Image (cartoon, rainbow, N blue to C red; front, side, top):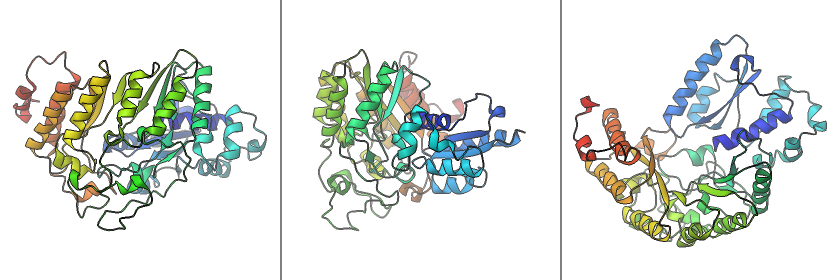
Length: 426
């Protein structure tokens, strides 16, 4: 998503008359796209900031992307501008104020990206025509934001609630990317398989769904009513989540989008990420199997293998549901490549609960896993939970899963042998 955002910003800036440079010391402006989803990228940004501050060219430093309110507060003291990625008007106004662009330029620009962008820029960031460095792969953002409110995740607060682009607009961008030489179309959103073709107004970032005990049982939005936790008061077990059970009932529009892109003439492949297990329907699985241009790859974040931890994460599915889902995927798509995300060291995760994650990984036989050591993110429900798994133990668990999943060919010893080593041996 950050790559996709940068492509649109690049088009905007070039449309405003800027030229890109790889030499930071030559830059009049430096724009960083942040990611507050984990602490490590934020730490890297602080490191880069020190380097930029030492440069003698007095570059204008600008920040955007996924930024928590707490991070934003601190970064505003160091950056010349911190703006919302969904509102580039802030950037344009700032550049005009700093006299870095000619105010009259906006009215007569003939840049292709500006024809799509400037007149409607206040309406949608997606209106900007992206300028891609890699013409062979096109990241096509079909939506932005998330309604799931996993207890560890900042995305609903930094990106806002889910909003999706009209199918016609997505198809037009896909066709343009193919015309420019794209060989792989990658559809991206925080939750692609909950795509809705009908355009919605974006909900407020702070308009979080309420806990079932706090609100009316009659919710207008069926999917919102299925969200179980947004406060730390009570975290129900998976079977207590009200609303429909995880059955992937919301992937109908997404499948229709896949089918329409698959029908476009040309020699290219289609990928998509990221999918939520609760929205992975039989309909979508069968479509991936039958559509010729769709790569047989599914990225399906599991995050944990323990029902207790999954409930505390507010993932809205159980271990059994996920295992049955993987079994079904492998049956319908025998040659599937299956990848996942896993968080180790989530608050209260015991060694026994982590062992359940290892067991699940063995049963699923993932081709690759993106493993993260839990770090508290400001503003999320999980920050109210005690981060009681020590750093050394998180690292140990990370290595066990990394060895088991990502280094299968090199791993000639039983992963449990690795698990029984002392921390000092790593």
